[in-house]
Image (cartoon, rainbow, N blue to C red):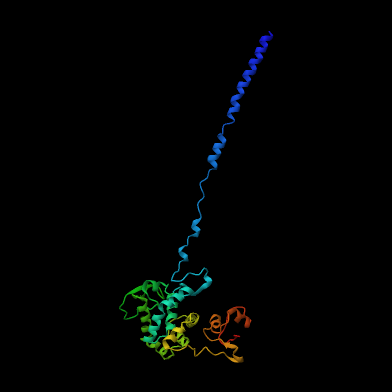
Length: 295
């Protein structure tokens, strides 16, 4: 009896041990870990090398390098094109010889021609300059037998002259002024008196903009276009109208039409900030007849 009881206990022990082995074995399978690998595995991130590529907007539009900010814009031309200092200087370098040759042949100051070309064509960037080599906005008018283009101006789709080369536009500009009686008074002026020429153009009806003379004078002085007049005339440029430093021992200057703080700073070799400090000015505004202390 004791033997049978002992045998029963031994059998029960063996059965219980063998039944637990599969449970231990199943918990060790790495199912979860392999699944997590497939989830966490991500594609390699894209590189960011595109940010180092130079975009087309940084390319010079005409020869020079486009400034980083609009604070360096020199002017907004009559063709509604923003024009930068570097582009204007490039334009001057390209057309100064043409302007001087026209001055020799037709008597129009090179400074005036260049300033008008810059202003009218946006330093060569305007639509008419690009599509028709027309740098002065000259319309077809009666008798024009050359090529033409249509362009919206005072009216829609007006007729403008088209040239094979910008130099032809420069020559036609001089002929345009010399062949029309309303501009005849201009040729009685001194060739180095760019101020009177600028005002005379406006008075003769070349432009309707009341500030047209000031814009031309500002361009001539800022970019020293008058030096090309001097080269043609063979003398040192001296203005007959803007060299008066009035009263009080030569320390003061009387503001004339077309003067700007920038042009005065260049003429008298003093910074704009120093001029403002000398005259207790809070901004750059000046008026004709104002006495400005320059030293």
